[in-house]
Each structure stands twice: as structure tokens, then as C-alpha cells.
Length: 335
Image 1 (spheres, rainbow, N blue to C red):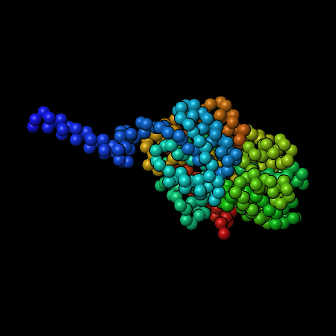
Image 2: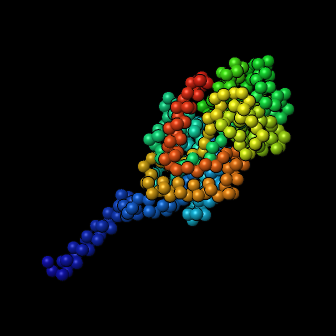
Image 3: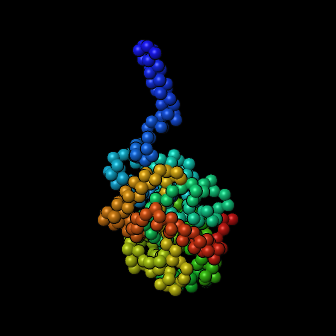
């Protein structure tokens, strides 16, 4: 082969390689020689459970600010409310599995919905990678500040006299819904569940007199108690919370079975590379240890946790049968 012929062959080879890299598959191969090494390489999207401005959205923003400082990459918090978190979870399940989209959520989307919903557009196990549980908490039973009862025993006595009291929650199958129906079963009082798309909407109707009582996240309850509009009758969790340390648990007031803690968990789409998941986990755990973040979580009524992915999986495996048993005991359906 002549020298000029050899040059022409090498030139054609380089042109062919350039053309291959210009194709979508070639571009992805060129940009990602090793999975996870380029993360983060673009804007990160965090999808929180619930509405914009709600407790989980607010907590997601606390982490987003610190992740942005840590990684030097823009982060947007993109709430997708509705359908008991199904819309948000489905969006994350179908996102590119590269770590640039994650979900911050409650057990409702991955446990309660899986038990109660006959058909979900996503598989809560197969379509997600658990990253970390940020914190633990529980819903609070609340009433207007002028309600003629101040604890669970007084409330039950009142409910037996009045009958058919209505209560509001942030959705069918939510922890608040389960606890409300369990209370109904245990005491024999007639209670009517009224689901809302957002906690704030239920509280507006509570203050307006359209509801007799409601459930609230500790952060919301704390703000409304301080504002003189609400009183808290009890918290459905295994322990009191630092946000409202004087509020007794249901167990302390003689009501058993209300000790299933809720949690805030972070998920990525399935098949997200292991190095990226590890980077997320390390960042979230370190941020959760920050004093100002722990204080912020406590102000929202959640006790900081920040565990490993393996611990998250173990917690999920333990919670699933307990929630299923509770749903059965409470007689909760979505009909």
C-alpha cells in the first residue's frame, strides 16, 4: 500500500468513527465511558410527594439547596401532585436512570398504594432504587381550637354522642386515612372519611366548619397551634416528636396499634448506576447530619435518620406486611 493510500484509509476510518459518534448511541457511548463517573452532568430534578409548598416539598428544597452547593449543579424541585402520589411516582419511574431525577416521598406511594391499588402504572419495587430514608414521623389528630375536647378519650366520648363525624386527610390510603379507620374500628364510633388532594385544603374546611376534625403533619399542626387555630389530640407514631413534645402518642392515651412510623424516603429510577446511587446516599447522609438540617427536620415534626440503601430496603421489607395488616384491620378500601 502506498503512503497516500494509507493516509486515505486512515482518513476514511476517522470519518466513519466520527459519524458513529454523531449517532445517539455513539454519543451516549462517547460521553459515558464509565457509568456514574460523569454525574452530575446536567440539571437535577427532585420530585417531591404532594403539592408545592407542602411539608415534603419544603424538606426537598432544604436538601436541594445543600446538594446544589455540594455538586455545583442546578437543582429544581418539581412537584407533581394528585392521585395519592401516583403521578409523581410514575414520572420518576419512567425517568432516565442516570441519577438526574429522584423522588422524595412517603410510604403511601410505595407501600399503601401497592396494597390498595389493583393497577399501578409503576412497580414500587422493580421500578425504583431506594437511596435513603431521611427522617421518621407520624400524623397528628387535630381539631379546631374551640373544639369541646382536648384529648383522645374526650374526643371519642364526644364522637359517640354526635355520630357521623367527618374527618379530612391528604388522600385515600394515606397513613392518616389508615389511622382514622383504625380509630373507627377500635372505638366503634361513626366516622366519615373525606379525602383531599392536599393537607391545606382539608384544614381550610376544618376551620370553615365543613369538617369535624382532621389529620395533620406535625409541622402544620405546630404552626396552626401557635397561631391559635388548632389543637392536637394525639400523634400516631411510636414516640413523641420534638416539634410538639407535649403531644402524647395514641399508645400513651390507651390506644394500641397506632405506632407505625411514617418516613421520608428518596428513590431513583431502577437501573441507576451503583456509583451514582452511592454518591447520592453519601451526600444525603452527610446533609442529614448537619445541625441546621436536623433542626429543620425537627421543626417539620420529623426525627432525622439518614440511613443506607440496605437499611432502607430492610425497613421497607418490615413495613410492608405491617401496613397490609393495618389496612386489613382498619377495613380500608378505595371504593
